Length: 117
Image (tube, rainbow, N blue to C red; front, side):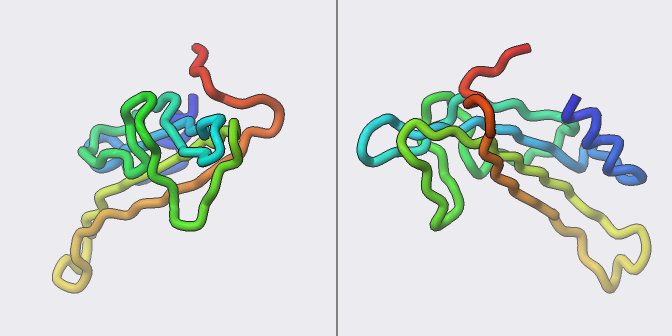
């Protein structure tokens, strides 16, 4: 549903081959260092070849923005959106580029460590 909503909100642009969305659940180890690790990840809404900057392998260390820290046993959801923009007009003035945005969310009621259908 999130991917379908993203496609709708991108109108008139298409995510098809030009974009992709990564949704990643990240938790910290329950030790003193609170190392962030990937719990799960879903990618979709497009087929662009941009990989996740957070990481994608379940259980692997997650890379979070500088200065962002997790407390032990804390869970966050990271959403990354990438879009390869090619100008329709003024292609001599504006160059094609990748537009990206990352958002971090802390679930309020329960941790989202498991992906349930």
